[in-house]
Image 1 (cartoon, one colour):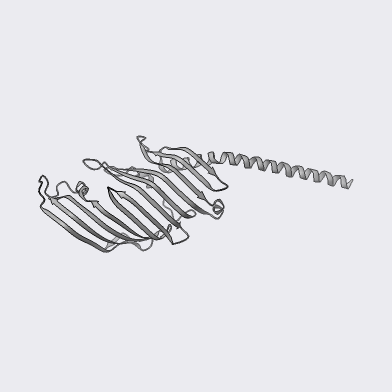
Image 2 (image 1 turned 60 degrees about the vertical axis):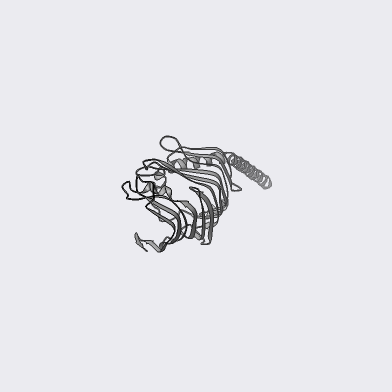
Amino acid sequence: MASMQRFHLASKSRRSIAVACVIFVIAAIALVIAWPTVVRHVVISELETLTHPKVTVDAREVNPFTGRIMIRGFRVLEREGGSLFADFERLDVRVKPLALLGRHLWIRDLVLRGSTVRVIRFADNFNLSDLVKGKESSGPALDVTVDRFVVTGGTITLEDRALSEPRTWRSESIEIEAKNLSTRRTDGTVMARAVTAGAPVSLQMQKFRLYPIHFEAVVTTTGLDLGPVRLYLPADAPVVLERGRATSTLAVVLDARDGLRANITGEMEDVALIRPGERDPVLVVPKATVQLSDFLYRDDKVAV
């Protein structure tokens, strides 16, 4: 009799385990099927909360088990007017899912292709003013590490509507490769290049830490056209810049505690100044060298 009871109990236990396994398998299958849709709605909802405009995505693939995410045809529309603010062709991300258990967002690869950001300057603000507003925070909610970050084929346009004659400036052919960006280490590096207003620009950064922010950077610009500077001079200026080109090197050290330090060296060529309404230059400078040393900005104070 006791053996029969043990048999029934064992059978019942096996049935319970089998039912639990079936439920677990069904739940796992449902999670795999539903996860991309859930993630899509959560991500887009959060983006709309942060940016206010409408966010659309053509295609997305999310695998929570391998940590792979793909988004294609991403667009953010302006809050007012519905014009396009930013978009990209494709984003591929590979993360370490288990790292999230330790409050660590660990991104192994993040590759962004064909991105465009359209910035508009109005008389009193920019179209991205609402995007940069947020609640003050004493620190990041979790640690972040990006092993490799790549941007290829990027473009940024600035439409300046605050001018009497609106102009549009472009920075295109943006290529960025960054490694070891993290809140946990200080050996991050960034290499970037672009063509801004027709002039090649390069950027090198080292000793990069995400938080508290720290980096050392060198920005080099070659053959920048100075002519458009006249658009930003006062209308009653006695002389205006007619033409000129500049090559410059800017060395910067930024630290969350120590502030900003910078050194600038520049060389200007074929600079011509004219009086408004006249055609002949009042001053022509074939070549000039400019240097700004030990610029310091810290605690709202400036020193040179």
